[in-house]
Length: 305
Image 1: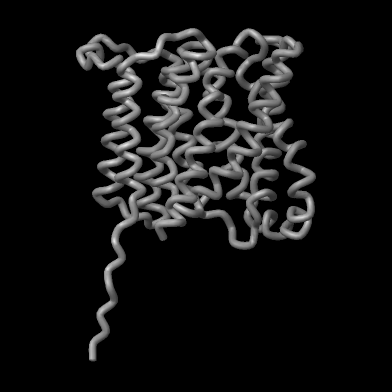
Image 2: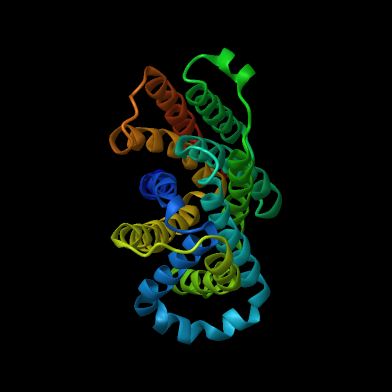
């Protein structure tokens, strides 16, 4: 059990490292493409990249997909089409750090509560302690170590979009555990990527034509490749494996690392200064994660004579 926890934790951390760059990238892309267009391009690239790895499994498992089409429609809509469009919409209205803070604070809470109700993951003191410490660390980072700043903090439109995005990802985290038996991870993701792209197609087409034309250049190419391959195909495969190993509630808590990782990236990529608050916040968040993922001692089985 301890080895499984360690592997699951390593997988979740790896996904968070890759995902943390999504908020930085979305800020760079606001003048290049609209939110629906960017999300659509992301899932098209992810679908194309995943196809050769998943086609054989998809062909064999197709009857299972047809039998569970409602499940895949809602997972594709909430976890892919809506979730990422909300992130890229938020990028037009708030900072990369705020995006990471709000998205990553909301989804562990949603995931832990829904997991307790829908997939019978027990919400014990470790989960609760981990969530509380994650929230404290996030608020500490948000207020730059001066908690009095929270009295003057105002939630912007972009922050509200990120709260919605965090809720969507929390729902996705839980219902990944409901994946129909017999469906492999790569074909599972291929179908969801494709559904995400298909559902976004009419919205993206309208946006490109009447709201914000796409600026096709080398910078946009690298952004789309990063979010389509690294942030999508690679990260989701790793993340889904982490959920299978440690559960939705525990995996989601690792998302509280994303604000810290994003703020560190902002230092190097956006020229922001590194602060003591980031160090303190990181220690608090990591403590919460360690408490939440530390395996409970196995009770000895007493045989009655």
